[in-house]
Image (tube, rainbow, N blue to C red; front, side, top):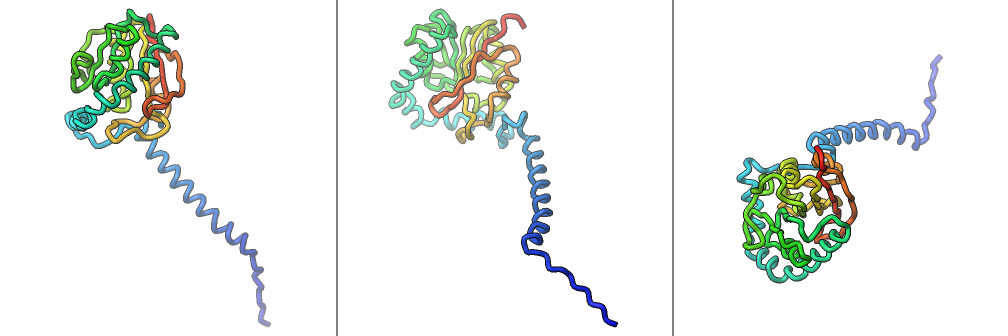
Length: 243
């Protein structure tokens, strides 16, 4: 006697699901592997140092391509000058009202290019102000590398910067700010965390958490959203009186 076995036909939807489960598992494992790889290149998953600099000199050369660009320098010193000085003046006035900046403060602008921020500080009465940049712009900006500031310890009451993204070594950038700040001194940073910064940036920041960790000698005063010439977040620190 010939016995025949009838194999029940599974609905197509069940067959589809049975095939889909292994695929989902495979994609999940691939995603986890990719996330693990990214984590190794992103400290705290929120700060990426961009690759491509074989030496520190190659990094400086890259930064100078922007800083020495004659068209950009012409724009900074002419077309952009009045607008930016006006906006920065209003910003510094708001810090004065918040008792974070005073007329008697010794102030430093880190990465000041042609010194619009310095001019704004002087306009609102903070006369003892100076900027540093790789290319000096006398009398407002002196030559200086923000990874190694040319100033003594505890020189300034106030420091401002909107070029954190250009720091190849963020820990040195922050370390120099804290070294040259007086105890009780204030540092204000304007940063971009919502997207990648420009092509000359040396790092990409995705939250304020890495900044808070880097400022080992300071406490956070406030964090708030801003619209600051392409930057979206303001973080204010105050150096501790006792370390």
